Length: 321
Ligand SMILES: [Fe+2]
Image (cartoon, rainbow, N blue to C red):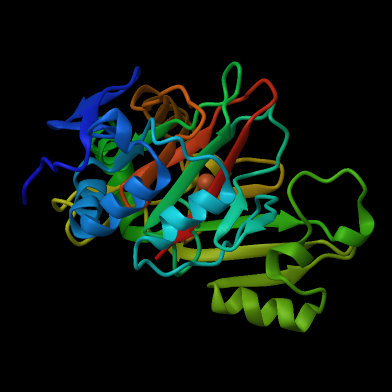
């Protein structure tokens, strides 16, 4: 595979890191200033589709910068330049449909940190690519930090070889609860009706089962979902045999609305989770969003999150198989 391409110039961004010889993110810019328009970009992407996809896998994150992408319509055209199928989002984030394959990324309050995750990690089918477009760059904060997942596994194995192997062997079990839309006014996230796309309990159970979860209805109308067993790590084709930290233990452990255990009910030691949280933060990579940026993340290789931000900030998303 040829790593250079005449239709893109490799740039740099503040915050990029070299991980095992690969720069993350790989910044791709117009080869000449007169090729920064959308049509030139679309042509370059269509001409170099396979190459571009290889770069996403090789570098885990590719940032298109200085192409003057203006809005959701143009972002959608970029997505559609590839032959990747759309994958419908299932999860807790409040999202609004914007245009064709484009959604708002997360409408949760900007003051909140959205914790690191592989997109839809708990669902049977998760996207291979998460693609983000910055329509309005935040004045301060609001980065989308990402973390090479295999580094987390490596470091956890160094520090907690026994706990990691125990969790791997036994598997993991998660629970989360979701309120009903009908009995709350100040909700974080969404009600179970939105999560499962129905307000019929039997139908919700059916859909939950298809996603690999069991539901239990509580007297107050909310629901508790149990998922498991799930893997601690996964190895994906074409990713150098790397063991990805493909779980959401830190995000769900010991929370008011969620929990994480080993699949047989064994508690996960708190110090292991705390240290894992620190490691994830230490391994994180972030750059400052610029208006018009388009970021392609290999969702099989990276965890991503959102730092608290001052308004305004508008980042749109598309997820692909
Ligand atoms: Fe996400």
